[in-house]
Amino acid sequence: MDIEELMCPMCKRVYANQDDLIPRLLPECGHTFCTKCLNELLQKDPDQPFLDPIDGVECQRKSCAENYPRNFALIRLAEKHEAKIAEEAQKREIEELER
Ligand SMILES: [Zn+2]
Ligand SMILES: [Zn+2]
Image (cartoon, rainbow, N blue to C red; front, side, top):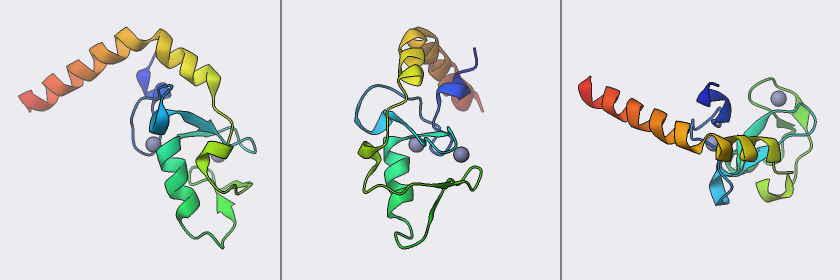
């Protein structure tokens, strides 16, 4: 299990079932972003078609990220792997310090 799969592709934070970190699904293409990044994407060029930055698929534009479905599968996975995620985060911190 690679915790990269539980991270938002834009900000690289691990998803969780709270506020900004809730994963939101784009139903048209199946990609997921955290609530914060999706809101930022929606605020950019509001008059243009809304394109997924990963694959360029045109998705329905809603007024805010909270109107997109939560990706419950990812929330459950993140909760299940909480211990491993914390361990991994600590390891990364140590690596940064040693650099
Ligand atoms: Zn994000
Ligand atoms: Zn996509």
